[in-house]
Length: 418
Image (cartoon, rainbow, N blue to C red):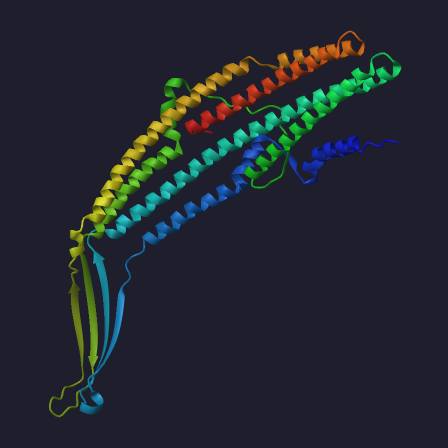
């Protein structure tokens, strides 16, 4: 009878960790499917899209004309006592802006709409970069989990064999206990790596709008081509970076706002057309017949407020500020591209030093040492060294490949291309 409940509890825990994604209804995702899901389901990106709709609605609102004013009046000239009659009147008035305020207002709203579209494109550029980086992190976590699982399975076999050999008297009981302890340690490392992989999948699920991601369907990382040379990087980035376009539109918007301020300070002209009907005046001293009256009026506001140049000065300063922001944005883009290119070249050079062949050699060495250990031709220390060497080589290879993907994703994001 097994009185120690801990081995069965560990088996149950490891089984739950493995089956947890499937219990939640998660399915394997390929990289292409993952990116499509992010573009379609990411909650933050869907919220950002409404900024474009809001800007479109504001543009429609900017096209509206000024409302006319209708005034209806009634006058009673003490008709009940003095019989001086009554007057019924109506007036229609409309104000014209001679500075083109409506046109300037439409220009501001149209530029704001373009700016919203550029900001949305830049948001998706950053989101696509984050999704690729998260995919690389999940892939690396999966490789680490596989590598440590291989080491754990190796030590499990060794510990089981040493238990039999110790019972037969071929090795000392202390050696069998040491093998069992090492097997427990390796399994603990694998369980931690598996939990990290599940957390990485949870991060992918968050980016995918809550769609459960159970596993990575792709065995290898996606490959991206960089069809540009170092000399043309800046030109490509300046032509494709949405945030740089947004900075240019911000500068344009400041100019449009200045034009709107100038237009709002121009002269306005109000026209009014009035009609009045006067009833018969029956007063004995000053009788008058019933008659209709029509009047036309012009209103010219005296815009003394235009003498205050505060609003115009603020708009002019905003134009100068936007020019400096645009210059700073261009400098930032150039710096980001240069740094991303340097990191990408270094990551490619590091990745070339690691290959599947190196991992295969390390695995062959481990299998050979394990076989020798089972025949008593190698020590446990040599076997542990072979396991750690295999782990180090395999993990370094996975790290180098993931680092290359990260550097490639950052370079593509810096260039503003997919």
